[in-house]
Length: 462
Image (cartoon, rainbow, N blue to C red):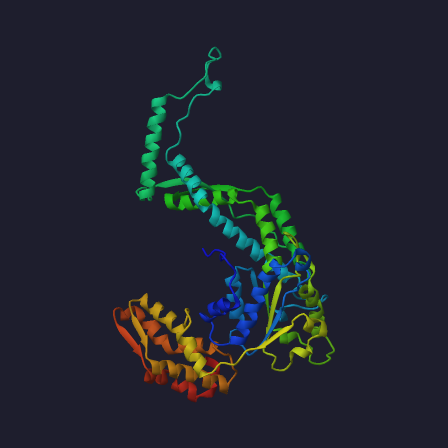
């Protein structure tokens, strides 16, 4: 598991890490690198000034598929921060049917608690495994019953002790069994373990918009009324070891501490990626039953400005949560947002549309490059797949042409083209074991020729 870096990354190092996965968009990378570094800087200033420094929220402007979400997601991974992607268009003004804006902070807190719990589980994993091993040995070799005072006749009052020879024999047998367990020689043995019965009564609460937290609390309260049921299962030793280790890990974790640290993590390093911000920009005054876009902006404003949100884990302050908003802004523009919201996003960065050269780099350079993914997938079928340089150029050019002719969906176009290009190879791969397949420019043109010529067909397939 990835641990927190020993020292915070510098802006140059952050950009270098982002470069491993995202092609181009240097300006956007610089902006998020500075925003992340500013979080560390805020922690170093005197405490009385620390709370006064607001996060430098960012608006990313650019078409879909150019890397807006990926930059934010990778940034969160680098900083080990709770990260939530949410569409602004999912929210509605209070009084309408839809999600309450505060639910984004509740979701973020839930994510942070799960992150913190997993990290704690990793820390106690070794100890939990040792405890589970002892319990498995008890199941395989139950301790011999020894007499107690209650078992003795009334006349006997002497202290009862187990005979030493029996103790020594039992200890030796236990150690031999432990060695067999470590060597995997008793993996096929069945043992009976007690597990929680998950088939509990389902409690479903229906409430109006904005009452999600009440739903959760009532569900938790009602589910707690029913006694926790357990059932016995016969499983093989390795599975029993996993079941018992997980149970022991839960006992070793201090959930109060986990929740406290998770809330602190959200407040100090949480990142919310607010997509489709342009969809709630009020372009014109509208009347009728339509949900007021301006109303949604006014509901989001307190969360971005800094407020306290009630979650099932306690109160969470949003003053220092970093908000990265994004939108294509084809019709509307950032200045169409209400002035107060504009002021809370001081950094604006425009992302460049992607062309042929960028597509070539996207296909080959990143650690998770598409070409690499397909080569590795085919390798699982013992098929050696390779792409010639001209083939990669042809794929990139085709993607750029289709984006120009139809809606520009950026790098996402490469996914649909690659799937279309390799569908025959993927389908026949199990029968092609041991063969080498080389994709050249002619193969690419042949597979995509009809779709490029027939605009109506490519509109639906690509």
